[in-house]
Length: 395
Image (cartoon, rainbow, N blue to C red):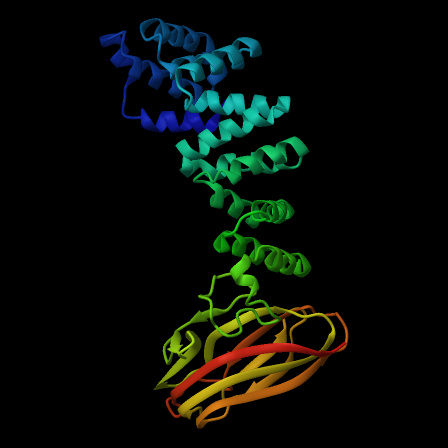
């Protein structure tokens, strides 16, 4: 039986006593539907099919435009082994109401079995729009469609039209390790010919690729989906001057305030336009960690890490630093220690070498050496970060 649609019907009509209602009014279509739904979801539905068949036919005779009655009769005939008759009844139900759930599910299965990808996608689109709360029940049909050339093109053209469930579907693929290759390919195709991409959607797929240690694919997807504006801020450190609002994607800045330190982007008028800085205001509390960081992809080679900063009355009793570490395997690579005090336009830099490609994925982040939060170590003052960069200095 078609469990989702019939179980839903049974729940909807559970307050009805169908036998009593029909004895009082044989034309009560609502009671007929309740009797059919209860019978088809009961403990032994096959034994009840002949009796239910008569109830369904009576319901159709009394209400010939009731799509659900045709769908339930189709379900009964399918249980009796009459596949062709059942299919015809499902089609009749959908001709009366294109959203009739039971018939939609049955004809969806038929379309997938027959390789009719366009019909399957059309029915899935109706499902996702009409019953979004049941999305996860039908979404597993999508990878099956995507793994055939014709099915892939059908799904791609549907997603390109931006249906309301597009992000939900891509998120479903992102969460399934067996479908992440499909999400990767779809993101490339969906964002190859548009001026503005969808960073949140792309970010979900990037995060999934990183979780599954597919670092090369993740970085390639990030690069190939940068729009024209993003490309002007590309570097080993993306958006190193904080000119762009962080997009939420890996390989872009992740910035957040927390107790003890306020983190914000601020603009300065230089006369030639706005110059953005990242401002950290320390609030006189211990600070164990700082939520400023970015994923970095680096091949083997020689590099220079540089930070351009201003400080005002900066007190950092347990230090403050930018550190670069390898994600897999976890190991520290290099750090730059921030100076306390007050100063302007200070550039701190250090060089480092990655001798081989055993690690490609890194994390550039700010931190302190505070182990246990204690008010003996209060951080205060402000730090303005004008630019963070990693530049290649040699092969």
